[in-house]
Length: 437
Image (tube, rainbow, N blue to C red; front, side):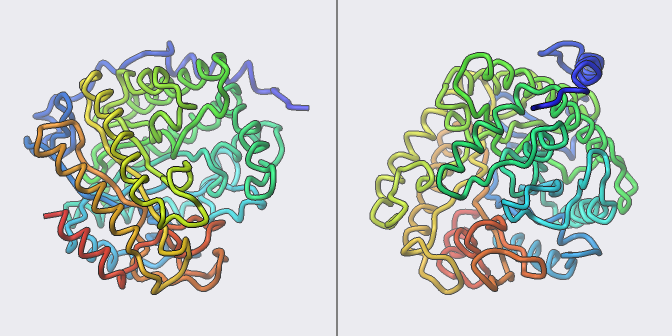
């Protein structure tokens, strides 16, 4: 039986913090006050008074690399950032740190949050270090604070703490449907959400132990992000309504603590809203959400056959253009920028590892970069993109990650090297360098 012992307490706590579902910040700084920070002006991101466009990447594991404990490797982190800067990559999207995940998911370790409010100071100092090193290189970070998928805890962590038990294993037959049903309760449960809100409060209000500044004054932070790929995980109107409400409450909470930085959802777009265009537009219309996000995963979404993705690359590119166009129209209606913050394609033969050709992936990257460049040239709302993802000098040791292995962009439960861009992937790197000019 699902226990809700904290429901009354947490509901009151949320109402006290947020006041109402759609409350807005009233003390946002003027542009002159945060000239070094990134702001918005209509459909444009603005940095130092000029439109800000970028080619970026995902390095979810950066705060672990930046730490001095298990998994820490500051020499590698600095080397990776230097490589990316040289390639023209100026924006990185990272996870604040993993929550204790379901053992069924082979979760990312070490954990930042082992129990509600119990945080690993070593990982937090690693996040401090990443922010400081990005500032040295005039690079920017998007930091996401939760995950809908259990490889880093996220929804499953909070639900388990509120009596729902371990999240089902999505990677076995029939497991995905059970996982979806399980995670739908995050949008409905005030206990789980309240634990998440408390985590937001701690992270966003933190003082950086290296720079000496509060996070809200850090110029290297571009945006806080509510979640990696938040979904209602249910199609009924009641759950979708509750989903939209927690998005609004979380965004309002972040803005109340840090009015200086941007806030984004981390959504995949309409795919992440159960194909509900109105819901997608609603959550991004919220006054505390500063720009739209979309993700593009052609193989996962059936735009290319999983058994032979190379044969579907042309259809994947065509479908991606349609998806981008739909969300471009949405961004224009809302008068906000759009970022393609995740996109990926596997290596030839859908194989994982080092040294496997990347012909299809290179074609897909070129296509997405081309869409970004075209939008910029035409004055459209696309501000930039973050490919998934950077693995740099890391090397896979086995099919799935185990403690002691190099961290790669591929989550621990996935084949290591599957979507990775390594520093020896010369053709992909040439494309990234070309489009960053």
